[in-house]
Length: 168
Image (cartoon, rainbow, N blue to C red; front, top):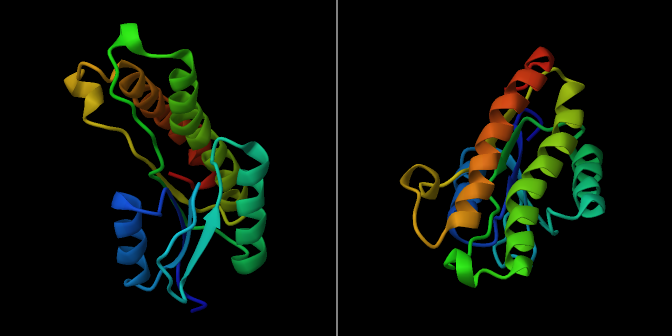
């Protein structure tokens, strides 16, 4: 489908990400998806990448593949994220690292590499997901909410930095 938009959705193995991948494939998008584990879902207009978005080299590999397969990228939906319900006094530092690496560092890497590809056509749309845990300040989700709050601020600044390239 040469006129189809090309979209990357992170976290497509299950849940919201999987639903979004199916939704957009059914609307004639060419969807590239990724998660840390393989996907059981198959479709001719869907390509799955087994990737940890917190790993810079793996993220660069996704975008090299997208560039080679499609020559462009129109939309990114940063859906991948992890949470852990823990009282702050019971939260191990390793959990903090995993959450911030996936939720913030992963979003950063996907946006940075995706914007490089979008910039060439002076067009792109990036959607970064947050959570209701931010405005509701849910107990037991301090680190998760903090990571997603950082994503919200990151997204606002990102929009300003990328607007001159037609990327919103």
